[in-house]
Image (cartoon, rainbow, N blue to C red; front, side):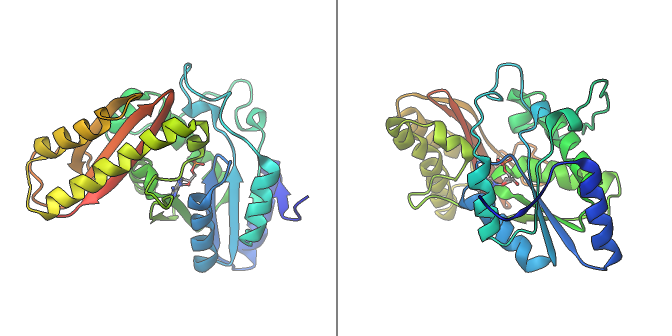
Length: 284
Ligand code: AMP
């Protein structure tokens, strides 16, 4: 049993937060869906560096899963997660109940107009409205000064930054770099779905991003040539199905045909039944 302090109720979390504010301490918040890995823990380490009090949440948010997505199957291991958070000296693990977050009659959602109409938002239509709604609710419950999100979910990071700006939330949003396995696969809770065969093919995402980086460094500027190469790399692996490969403006997410300034290359690929995403910023 881990000894980390856990809070389950919204009111208790708000009262805890009020006490931190009264004491003049700085609070950082790191929301997660649990089944923690080193990517998540890098955010906790960053949190420990930037604030006095570190709060992490674990909540598998039903509102961001579509009807045919993996909500029920999403991996969970709360005991292990709490031990890992304790090792990172996280002060509070906030573990709300779905019924308290979304009680009967819940009907208010936060939606952005532009950024979600790109990349993952096109194949997962409810994803970002679910993400912005839960993150805003968590911000109102935890009341942090700083929040940390991973660049692994680059579009999510942009969406949250935009929401905080548009709604004048007095919260500093920090993006943290993607943590990868030794061979380059971006860490993800969903990697646990992969069979050993699929794990090999999952590396095609990183391989294609790395190849793109090399091509840009060698002077290739035409996005279509790079996307074609990435497509070939991924298609050379069996059991892969490309959802999208895009090269786009790293702020607006609009497609870029010529890489004449730093550009985001983002991709989503199904490996077997597991949908994986990854991205890198390509710098000419
Ligand atoms: P999740 O539990 O997947 O919702 O992720 C919680 C937070 O961890 C989000 O801000 C993610 O972007 C971040 N995250 C997930 N995987 C990684 C990774 N490999 N490296 C860095 N951050 C990550």
